[in-house]
Structures are given as structure tokens and as C-alpha cells.
Length: 97
Image (cartoon, rainbow, N blue to C red):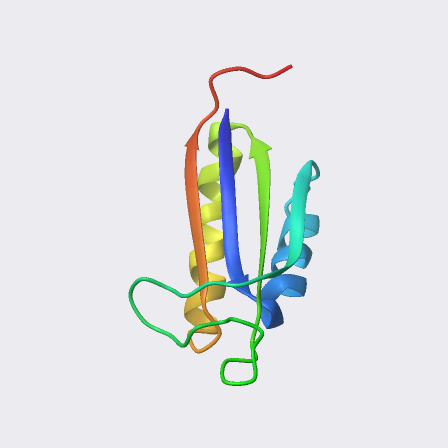
């Protein structure tokens, strides 16, 4: 089992949600308004006068194979929208209740 965390520009959130629907990924928790700045490139997203953009994020638990498929699809989505910004991280889930 994997936890996949996705952080993206708010403009990408609906595209990520559509991808999840298409892949039948259901259980998730999302945050529509977050601040942050990427570690590699991109502008800060702070919701301020100087940096008005915002980020969104979600975390979803899924089987290992589905997580790998999701990460591949997210990479493609990011490459198609490279100016928006999207990052995804996955780690093992030790226990599920």
C-alpha cells in the first residue's frame, strides 16, 4: 500500500481530480488553498499581494501498482503543463485500519 501526496498550482487541481476519476482512485483528502514554493523552479505561491497564486494538495492511499500508474500519469500531466507546477511523492503505508 502507498500514500501518494500531490501538490500543485491551484489551476491544476481539477485536472488532477479528473485524472483520479478516470483511474478510479477514490479515497483521498484534499486541501484547496495552500501556500508554498517549489525547491527547484517556479514562483512562490503565497496568496499575498506580491505573490497572489496559491497551491492545492491531496493525499490518497492506494495499492502499489495503482500508485505507480498514478505517478506516471501525473508526470505526463506535469510535462503537458510545465508552467503550472505539480509535484507528487509516494511512500509506503505501514498499517491500514
